[in-house]
Image (cartoon, rainbow over all chains, first blue to last red; front, side, top):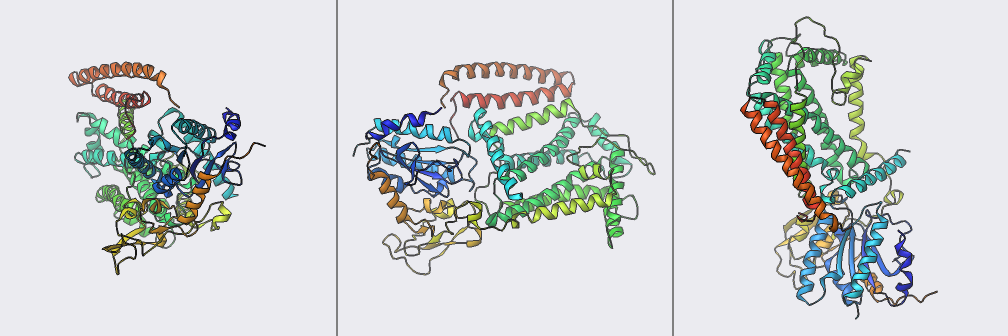
Length: 143
Length: 391
Length: 67
């Protein structure tokens, strides 16, 4: 359903900043992003498109959190369908490890997430991002 | 036109995935494991084939009787024969699914052409081994297939008669024919493993086995088929008889179905033309990435001064495009000062996916058109930007 | 998409399939004993397919994790 536009009013009053990485081959990106790389309907979510989810360095997610984002996520293709065969499996592993590292540093590991959505799953992707934003809002996105 | 239809086929393929993923967990989707499924069926074929081989007698008089003995008198012989028979069908279905899926989802271009070519060879050799399997029973169907093949081979210009002679082991069917057919069945089956080495050689961690669910299901399905529809022979082959048509698996032996409508030589020519056009598929559509609507970020480049020789990129590269070589000189950064190895990217294998960049904790790899520092800037901009004022 | 509330239903179905699988084991013994080999192998096939379905149901009931 059109849950996303409904969230826009909240987004404008101090919604938590979120940085995401989106694989070129995952969700169809036509009309998904504004000119400034934010998600349509969710101006607090910046999305950086990458050639494969496996391109993302875990350090970049940490950098996003350090720079003030409440959360950071990576979205790859459905598990098993990576164009480059295993980028999303590798990325899921890296995020698992990053979460362990974060919890050792007393940072809420729920602030990083991995999604897997295919070409036709834009609705589900946007729902997942909205849920993620709600989650990190609760878990201390303040600087 | 071709390009447009490929795009819509890609869209349809992924739509199908979405539907399957709604029913099954993502990592159980059988369409993500078509190659693994093919390998599973090939393994079952080898195992059941060895058991059948123990009973098979390759002679004109004994072949039919030995297969009948296996089917009637050996406990569960009919089941093994059925599994061999239906696993061959399932194998062909799996490799065709594999072919079309990888074709429609763009997994054959540029650096991946080696897999596509070896795949075409695998398809041809598999089809040939499947066809010679039908000859070994030496019933009327085998006789019909053999005579159609001989007709097709004879019509090849220049070398036709010679080919037919090589196929039969003499000017006509004789005592050496069935041992030759047996070799033509087992030999290609072994060749498949050589070709599989080529198919896998540029892949790290190839997915060669489906998830347990599909192993159980496929094996179960084969047992059910082999028991419910036991594989049978036709009437024994008679020297000099000219058998009429039989029900054959049209998707397996479609060239022979065609051969009933056109001269066998033309059916053979059609097969050769199809295979040849299959071989050039990776080299059609030589368009630039921009025309394809794909960002080309350039092949990964090693920043030599930062490389510590830790091998992380080497283990993560899905296409074995990174080699570790003995380091000719120490790196500049502190971590790289004592390195023993240096990563080197093999350009012809790199697909520009950037997985090695994600693997590298030392900033020693870059995609030329998406540099680490630019990404960092964008992250900081995204993380710091103030929420827009409501309009 | 969490389907926690349907987990119990999936498990019940898995239990039912497991009972069917037990019947298949019975059929396998019967087929082997009385030389009805096709019955035995057919029952084995059904058994394997049932096991495959049970593996899926366990996963859908979140009883097993992704591997």
